[in-house]
Image (cartoon, rainbow, N blue to C red; front, side, top):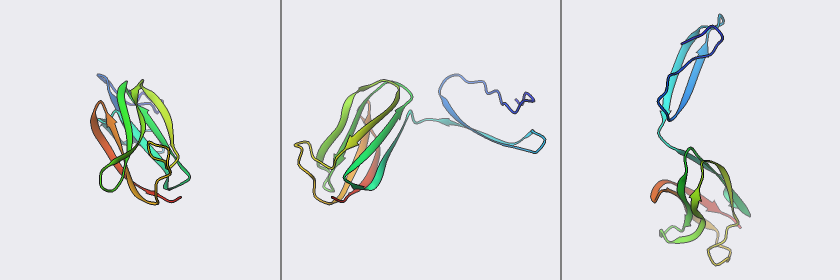
Length: 130
């Protein structure tokens, strides 16, 4: 609903939504799209390739049990970045290119995985360059 002030009222029953609008020069809505965000998280990692250290930024819409792990190309877990119950919000984790014993990993390809409430929800390839 366009209330004349370039605002759009959207009745919701909960959840999070992405709203995109394009306005005409007179302020009327030309295009509007509403997409429900079914993911209750977002995660990003930078830089990639990793030189020295990488920063993981995790955002959660609701409280969850979270695990971020690094695996080698054989699928063996070599590092647990985080493993704990996390409240809704945004969090940063730093990885210094080491394994769970503190030893620096060899250059090469690795994968990070995000688990939420025990379910793997995302996996991305990482290149490590020491």
